Image (cartoon, rainbow, N blue to C red; front, side):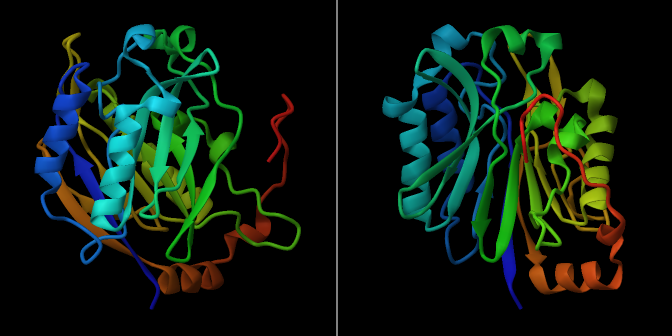
Length: 271
C-alpha cells in the first residue's frame, strides 16, 4: 500500500528573527527523519512571522540563508521539508513556498492571493502559476494561507485524458485566531470538493502586533474528516499517514468527479 507520511509542525514564531526560528525548529524536530516521515510541513513565513516589512526582511533568493537552511534540513533528514519564506528576486518581493528535496533540488510556489486587509498586496508581488509537486505517488498542489478562500484557484482541473489533476492539497498559514472557524471549515471544504486529502499547517502564539494564532493545524482525508486535529493552541509535531490505495478506492466508489464543471480563469491565468 502506497503511503505518504506527513508531519505537521505547529509552533510559535520569533518575530522577524530567522536565525532564532531556524534554531528553534531544529530543536523542535529533533532527530525526525526519513525513517519516520516523508514530508515535514512548516507554517507560512516560518522564519519571520507574517511580516509586512518585506524590504527589510526579505532575503535574496539566490543567497537566502533561510532557503539554504531548508535545503540542508531536507538533506540531513532525508525527506522533503517545506514552508514559506519572504524572498526578493529580480526586484520583486514574494511570499514564496519552498519545496526542498533531499537531493538538494528546490521547487517554489509564489502566493497568489495576497491578504489585502494586512496590506500584503502592497508589500509583495502576486504569484501567477499553480504548482504541483510529486512525492511517494501523490501529486500535491501547493498553496499559502489566504489562497484557501478561493476555490477556483484550487479546484481540480484535470486534462482531457485524466480524472484528477492532483491527489492532495497543501496549505501553510499564519491564520489569526479570530478567524479560526473559517480556516477549519475551508480545509474540510477543499478536501470534499476536490476528493483529496488536505494538509493544513498554521502557527500558534502572538506576533509583535498583538495578533494571536490558534493553530488548528489539520490533516484532513478525502471525505473532510480529520486524521490529525489536536485540540488547543499548543505547539506540536505530529505525523499522519495518507493512503493512496484508500484514496483511489474512494474516488472509484464515489465518482463525483464525473459530474464536475469544466472552466478556465477569465483573467488569462490558465490551468
